[in-house]
Length: 175
Image 1 (cartoon, rainbow, N blue to C red):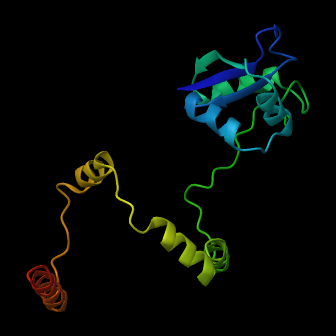
Image 2 (tube, one colour; image 1 turned 60 degrees about the vertical axis):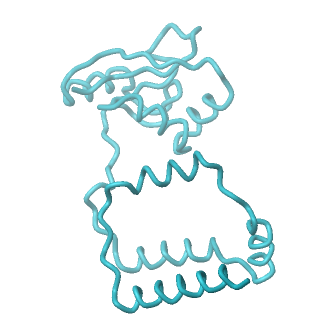
């Protein structure tokens, strides 16, 4: 079932002319999306300006009926905080294939975001060296890994671990 919802201020009394009307299957998720994504400047500005914004569920019905009801509340664009005419479903990116060019651009952007100079790497290393993680962090990490199957070690890896353990043992027993 879908919901027709009204995002508004407590003093708003008319859903036909005030606030924002929308439809969603998951209103809690949709409210978070409205707060995080800035595609609707009217709604984004209102949510940033006012602390007392409310969401009211107006109707719960099948999808087609909710689309009709939204169009009834917002028959044309620029009513209340809505910028578009009601009754349309925004396109979903789910299931759409992205071109290799688009994927390559996104990967390049991510890589460019995290490039550190050698000086920055040394500063980060100096800051983090000698730090101990709190016991609760260690316990939480351990709990998330418990029960997960790991790939078996290769013979080369086993040999490297054996040599490292032997070197550690010899260092500790040099007296």
